Length: 295
Image (tube, rainbow, N blue to C red):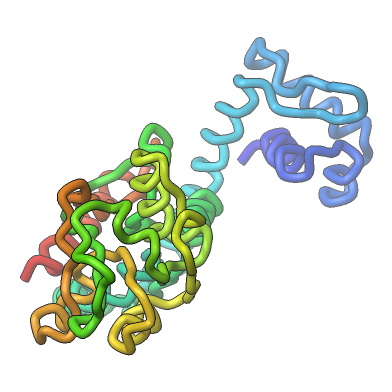
């Protein structure tokens, strides 16, 4: 990477010329000179100043995003060269927590049967955390359930899953619920803010001019297994991907609440860095996980 680009990316991270100079062990005038050189080279302004604060222009954002992908690609090339003769190759991927618990193990098992020479590291987090890990080059791709800016990432749909309201089979309602509004007197069991499952629920409630705060009581759990256990203990109702409670629904210990005004499915998508020189290779990896997950 050109050393001026390294300076530019450092300023993007710190949004401060002085801090960038300290981090790079160069003078502040040198930082300014590197930025001016790039602006002259590309014929655009990269930063604008408001008072003592600087912020990226639209051109600066485009250069930052493109150069960050190039920087990550360069690091991956270096890693490929370092491990060229190693019999075992590393692969780091990500999955949102529900997918990591209920989908990824089966897909990963099938993938590893075809690639026993790979050391696989599966990271879990919410969609925002995984997007950041992709941007930083920490993972090759992620399988996510939440919403993401589709224009900023390459993506491939893994499959669609039903998103359903669920309760204990032993749960009794004051009156049989027919519409979403009939559930507002119930205790809602939901995931923490930032999780894909909660984000999807909040968006669907908003369509009906509702929010999680409209439910009379709420119980927050940061693990889907915990939510399923709480449902089995009849602690309330929840909205979740059917796959997370499929076993319990089939056994008859949990049941889907049939509503006239709530029916939805949502895609589980692979996402990875846009415009990476490794994009085709990553897509092939994702296709292998997809095929393995369908078996």
